[in-house]
Image 1 (tube, rainbow, N blue to C red):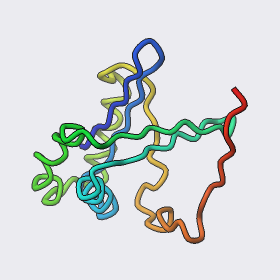
Image 2: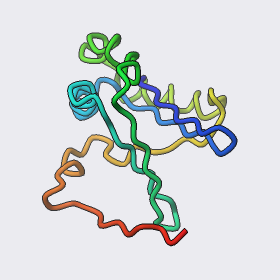
Image 3: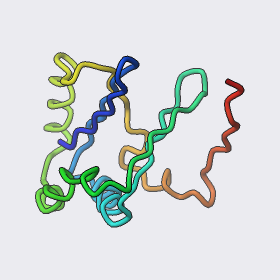
Image 4: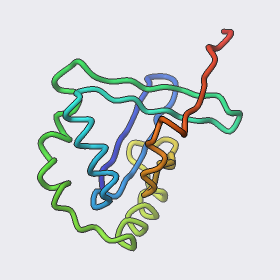
Length: 124
């Protein structure tokens, strides 16, 4: 599994688990490493969006860089992924909200020429 944990001190922790054998996951992780930055969009039930951005610090993606050969060679089955996800849901570490990766294995979600979301700034 690839586990992303986003911890905001005194606010919340969000976890995402993705299957490293997915061709889409491999492409996204490789792109994150090549670009050195990434954005995570959290679309809330109220249709609000929280954006996480990281990059610039060479250590931000150190774990992914170090494990890229293992990720690219992964053969995790869908059943193994679901089993790990179920176990993680019972005892998340770090504790926090488990998010769904919206793309799953559908590469069309990454086509921003036709599938895009227009965001308006918050009035806060």
